[in-house]
Image (cartoon, rainbow, N blue to C red; front, side):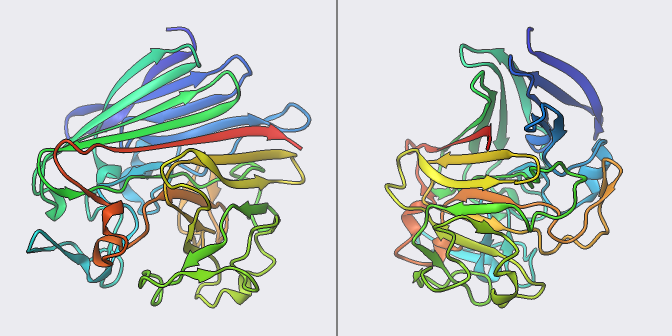
Length: 348
């Protein structure tokens, strides 16, 4: 199929793991594996026309099997944190695995990032595309309901990476999917992202105790969380008040949470690369790679602190435990979950 190649990436429990390479007319190259519906590489040109892989990751399947950083993964059934690793739904309390201290993170010990998805490549009018699908069993990781989930990656001829996530359930449950690439627009081996200039279309964020939101909504004005005008990520890093220093918070994206709208813009001055993100989710988790500590090695590179940044569009973290936010994550039979995001690449 033109613009799409398939190769073997390894084996998991006797099943073949595949790697798909998508190339658009502009020369951008995207690689996705059906393990975790994970983006492993994305090659984008700089102002001199030189391609660089702008995502952190591993060159072999073994790295993804062993790491816990969620490089490029599709996260679910519920992305981000659920306080105290439990929730109540329709009068029943559901205990979950505590995978981040006392809290539940990114779907549990074996979330969707560790599942083997089916994959179907397709040549569309917009560009080469890959549809990945997974069936999450009733009771998987403690969640009720059987869920049919899908994510479609499309590398458009407009130099966009488009993602469409969908899910349906046969029983009332929680769904909050997220894409978890670590971006470094200088290239994965170019050092930290602290000089990247970031702007966020958000007037408020949801502070945590210490990192899990409590329901409070706080204006960003006058705080280190104010990215309404572009600024280097490293400028206010030491003022955030976390240890290790950095951002790992949810911003409330301006505008209707059900409409595709601008979320973020990232500019790397040295290469000239620009990433503009649009999405139709209510929030975005900006994470500055605080917990990378040099222990992970991928693509021949040791990933140090702040080696990449994540922009995870999502429902608000811990939404199920906060009545004013619960509707963002509860889905019932016949009530589909959908999320769309567009990553547009250009030069400045």
